[in-house]
Length: 339
Image (tube, one colour):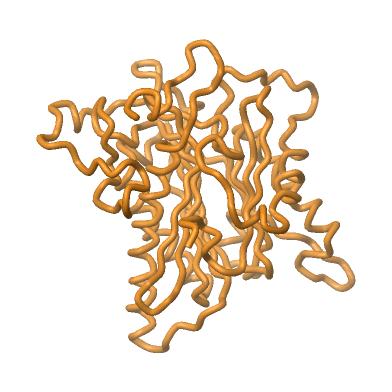
């Protein structure tokens, strides 16, 4: 087990970033088309192909999910991934034509100190294509956390954000994993200290092993938002994908995404605000069958519960592993302050 979303058989992950722009793109490419759904809770999402993921829509399978920086500019990244997939013969077949189906979401990192004066076209289409190429081979299974890919430009209220991932296995042997870009309006840590809201779900010392503070600090429940009184809708959004190798229907994948949002609420405070664009995709690679009848409902409930736990852990890992950007007034990393 890598403790990454790539512990789920049937998918690979690629990243591309631009240090000058201080932004990047991350893509999850499925070995074969995967059943997928989405749950959107934030007030200001930037998304692509999310309407298609509604259980009532015709197309059941997608080829990839893209998580990107760049706000609405970052929605060019799925086009680059789509181009790479088309070059490799992937896509929804209509006659002798194939159309790759790539869902995606982007978060706002345009004020983090990087040079965003890129001219007529943003770099995100090229970053998407490069991330897809990087997902091939062994590199698509093992990756670092923190400032990787789309996590490069991420921030939280007081600490550098980043890319996080985690995984788990159910007692019956089904794999569940999460990958997340933590760019929250709120905080992944409690008050002004080093302890993570996700502490009860930590496995080993994957994000420091500090547990909850005792006693809880007096300011623990005071909502703190990025920018303080000057907080804006432009600076936020946490975007994620949870995946499993259980064979799910589109409606069951939707329920998985809904339940996984609980993990975001356990790990970020406050969350799902008008200032956020929080999005959770869910995908099934369909490698393992679930039972029928009432037992199936119990199995989906178990998957959703574990997906929430895994996503909470991934959020904390994204902040724990991040590094400060090399710009004046850049936010400190968790390790700069507390390691």
